[in-house]
Image (cartoon, rainbow, N blue to C red):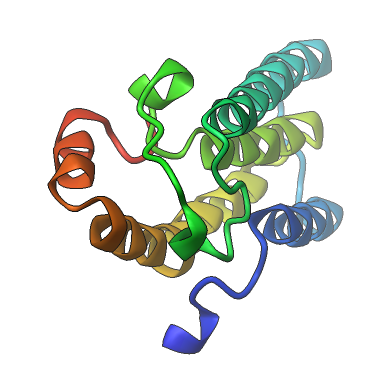
Length: 153
């Protein structure tokens, strides 16, 4: 299973899961809720997801460290300010919120299950290898940061 570690860029993975969510919505029933409520919730999650992701990228850019999720060994500084005080992985939180937004927009309960599999995949094949690399680079500073700040939210 290690062959999957750090192989699929998270943005590409988000597009793949978006496609899966769309397929699921085509073959299963919609949620029986007011469409305008779902659309407003979808917009809320879309904006929140976009802001989380953008804030994460800005934090890395300001610290002049790599934003390439496939090369965590290239990290040059530990970012623990800004949005990184709330989440160790705000870009991934943002991508997850975008998937939730899509599931709401498509009004499909089963799509939420697909979005949860995104978290499972990210934890195992993206975040865990990143954390191992960051522990090697930053040692106890990173371990202290992990103890202070949650992985997602």
